[in-house]
Length: 357
Image (cartoon, rainbow, N blue to C red; front, side, top):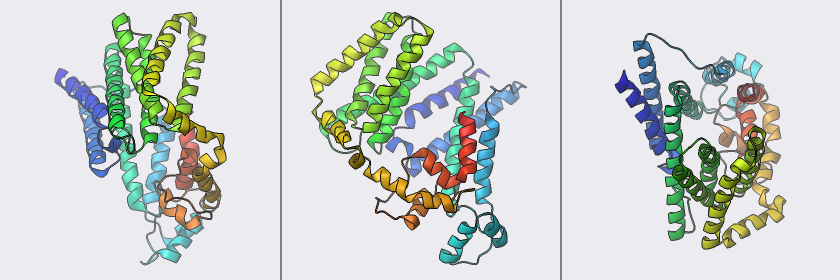
């Protein structure tokens, strides 16, 4: 049984380290590798549980999640034309206007291949989540996983900084765009700072503060405006929550050390490009022009597909038909709630909201 535990943990660590490596895992080949390993991880975990003769799972709010997955599967089920016309008239109209084949066995998803692709991704991520949630059952395992995440974030942040010094323009680190990189850092930096307070070794505390500063510097130099703003707000929220639990002076040294190291890094590299980037927010309407166009073009789509949506992962396919104001070619709305409503209707939106709540 020990070798199964080693295999499970090794696979988890590999997924953490590998996922951001090739365009942050959003190209067909890395996606296929991640999906395959995630399902393998789930299989090995269930095998371990069956060999032990038990399956004791951590309680999680899975009913809403199962219902959401059921909704996506329902979007992929071929339906008679009469049924589709009754439950989603505008989806049937789309088929009637644009579909070249016979109007029979039609799906609620206007692009079932795209829906199937994203559904497989979602299931693979949930498989990894499910395994980690149940496998990490003691502090020692938890520390190893958290430390792996911190090391991974530090390595990709450091690579991003080095790459920016060589080629200032272009992608950041191994990510397809700076927004994705900033989101990755925003998840890891608070975890990194939190880890300082459960670590007893002063040397390790200093190293982790240094790594958090490296990641923060990379986030700032990625020039993602929303990332910088959200990161700043998350630190304020972190301080507020920390203050509720213990006297603030206990975390003051860590906070000052973090700010000092980050400040020294910024002073050494310079903040001119960051200042110019943030200066665009003086005119927020101009800075958010692309997002505003998406917002302006979206209400008619929601009005036509309010219940079941157009299909998971079909925003880019339906958006062009409803474009009123000229916008860039988009595959995503850059607005998660809005895209969720468009693709899965208000039913899908409410199910995801219930799961998160």
